[in-house]
Amino acid sequence: MTQGPQQSHGSQDRRAPQEGQAPQVRQAPQDGQAPQESPEPPDHRQGLRATYWLEHAWLDHHVEPGVAVEVADGRITAVRTETDAPPPGAVALRGLTLPGLANTHSHAFHRALRGTTQVGSGTFWTWRELMYRTAARLTPDSYHALARAVYAEMALAGITCVGEFHYLHHGANGTPYDDPNAMGEALIAAAADAGIRITLLDTAYLSSGVSKRRGGAAPDRHQVRFSDGTADAWAERASALKDSRHARIGAAIHSVRAVPAEQLPTVAAWARARRAPLHVHLSEQAAENEACLAVHGRTPVQLLNDHGVLGARTTGIHNTHVTNEDIALLGATHTGTCMCPTTERDLADGIGPAAQLQRAGSPLSLGSDSHAVIDLFEEARAMELNERLRTRTRGHWTAGALLHAASADGHAALGWPEAGRIEQGALADLVTIALDSVRTAGPLPRLGAETAVFAASAADVRHTVVSGRHVVRDGVHAQVPDTARALADAIGALSRRA
Image (cartoon, rainbow, N blue to C red):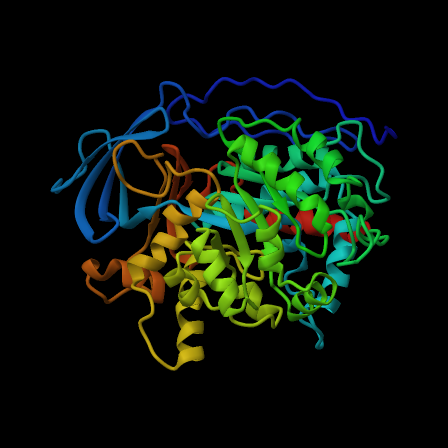
């Protein structure tokens, strides 16, 4: 294998901070070094016990006042209702507390594009050219710095787990790093440093478009860093990635454009053997459908089904331009759907048939995708409001159903079915929104779910708890206290590399 830049691993004191101390913050790596191992991943920290008192809590179907949640080793051990005041030693979370939110679909590096792609007009394809330029500038060091800040922004928005759809595998010219997974490991370390969990959806991206030629069309100069050459080579590299307390490894097929049809079964089999989540960009663009029909005589959904990709552990991202036959097939196989409404409208992609998909049997989750904004409340709201615009009727989902898509169903799609609920045995993930901001003041607390979905924003998040650890307190991130500066520095550093 061609050798890339040397990557070295430093040592770090892994002792947990004492009660009342700020969590240890990992030093940024020097150029040429791989990100160091995080001092203390957030999940299942041995001996961590705490009690949180929730002024109001959404318990899946209703809002309950005065709830005490006991936590040990990252999980909820008891939920006690009718607790009028905080028990001795409890941490009070005032406002409305929800289960931690799951961002099912993320491309962390797209955060660097926010604001810069809004000049003039264009299409998804012209936007993609700007995206490629940003991708070309990233190294393991700079990607770690950017992702750490992006994941801290997510924690500030109440997100406790992210699904990172990761395909920036190699150096900008396609040369593998000495550690072939240096970029993926940078993302895993960044999530730990930001205090959230991650499902790294390691992505097969092998060709530049749908082609009749076996092996597909060769990647273009922008895409060579994404490609392992073949699905077998992708599987060999991805197999070196390992689950940890805060990270789980899944798989992704970038799209039917990017993985030749004959190689789809290899990716599907890899995920199936590991019982890992498998995600795929699916029918995002009408042009993708047209190309697939021209070459294969099948829609992308039908092609994926033919090659064993669909199923209950598979999630289609977007599912925008699916036919009625596609919808029936996705529902019959219980393949999930991740809607990313703020990205879909930003890129003028269209409105997917989310309600039809769910009725057919496809579970819904939500993602912020390109990070035009990072706000799962806005994603949930937009899914309902998009459907209202399309059908000119209201009330396609209850507020509770939309919160379920943003929490429990999102976690399940990412391979964390034990998260997304405030109940005994679940991972101790909590997010508290203010009920007294200019957006949320007024409604009765019992209407908290409706207030959260249809009025609140990420700016209303006051507390985020991940596996019992208080990551965001009073709107400030414990490990990345000046998140805005961290974002500005990381994005500015990329601009200087242009």
